[in-house]
Structures are given as C-alpha cells and as structure tokens.
Image 1 (cartoon, rainbow, N blue to C red):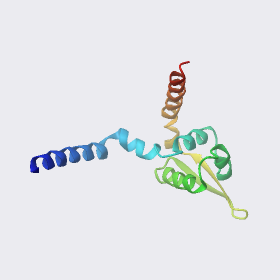
Image 2 (image 1 turned 30 degrees about the vertical axis):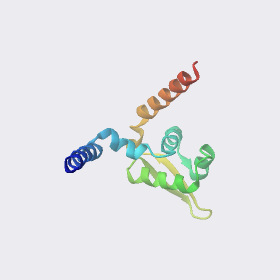
Image 3 (image 1 turned 60 degrees about the horizontal axis):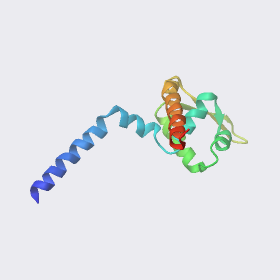
Image 4 (image 1 turned 90 degrees about the vertical axis):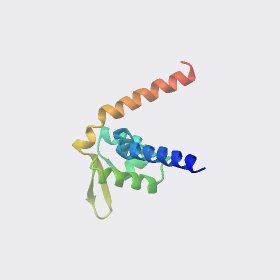
Length: 122
C-alpha cells in the first residue's frame, strides 16, 4: 500500500510540476476559459462595448463575460475604457500584447472549421 501511495504521490508531483511550468498549459489557463476564445475573436476585429459583446455572444451570461473580461484585462490582453458615466458605458479593446494572439486565434478558428467538416464527413 505504501509503495502504491508513493508511486501515486510521485506521479502527482510530476504532473503538477508540468502543469505549473508548461507554457501551453499556462496559455490555456488564460485563453482557454469558457467564451474567452469568442471574446478574443470579436475583440480582434474591433473595440466593443459590453452590450455589443453580449449581442455577439448571447449564450454567455453577463456574469461570465465580466469575469472573463477581467481576467483578460488583468493579463494585459485587453484594455477597458470608461466612455461615459451616465449612462454608464465601457469599451473593451485589444492591447498590442493581446494582438500578438492573432495568429493563434486564427489557427484555432481554421482548425475548428476543418475539424467540424471532418466530423460531418464533408
């Protein structure tokens, strides 16, 4: 029993070390959240107000959109600009650092289209 636990513990530690130090996992922790890819895709096209984002991604709740936008802002991928106080309006736009994701987002989009066709048998 002790040997099994030690083996399991050692595998768990190695996995956690890989998870913490793997640049792919680190990137996916930032851009892999639910609706984050869609947010980035739309913001790469143009700056958007929150209400515009909601229209582009109607399936996402305002709460989850707000959470995802905050993470992207904290990571320096987007900026949030207050346009007016009454009525309150904010606009989100990509930073230069965020725009560096353009080829990655485009490649994910291309792969998603190819994968969907392959699944349909086209």
